[in-house]
Length: 315
Image (cartoon, rainbow, N blue to C red; front, side):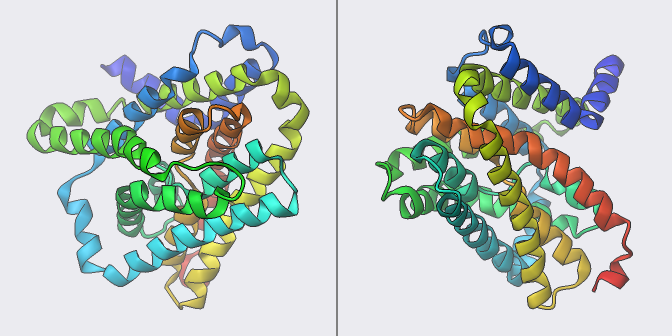
């Protein structure tokens, strides 16, 4: 266990670089990663979501009832700003349909699982971040299909009911199982949580490797454009989230949580939905995979930048 803990800490610390290295390997030597099947994506995402459930406690949901105003602001910002930014970017860059669908899926997904860590590193409001992630994830089966239908329905057929069922299966069920395990088997769960960064990172790496290797040829021709759009989507999300917080005169720690929560998406879910429901558009899986790589890099840099500024000065 001690070795696994050290290995987990190593993966947690160097996750961004490890993900970049694997993505590059899958892009330029795809044959090395083709053994990781895209059909595994839902199972791999389920593992990540189960891990998220193991870290949750019922007390984490208290913020939803003790600070409903903050949670509602975060919820509206999450499901308004990122989908709209995604849609605008697809129009500005005149993206082809299959890439546009992938970008919109990223925008309509709930907050990312690593946003809570980044909020902590930024000296932001961690309970608010945890509450926002929990609420946006719980409502994802409803909001993600409806918003995808709204923003992508004019381009492609969107089966909102099938998407709803998929999100319940690969997100809510694993999280619920993790929450139940944590409640009834807390002692065992605490041991497992110590190596969760290793498990989650490996699952995310495998998702990225499978998507990139399966689409390496076409990705080389559109990769630069996808990266530019993904980077802009993420950075504009940070800026818009922080801007909303300042506009509503929230304190600095809340602004930080809101900014990171809005800017960081559950891009693994976007990749899963693209692979399952838009299989006729293989490149739709790429924006989610690229976002998974990029937002962990930008999130760490952004969190360090925010942490370097004293909260009182940022009000």
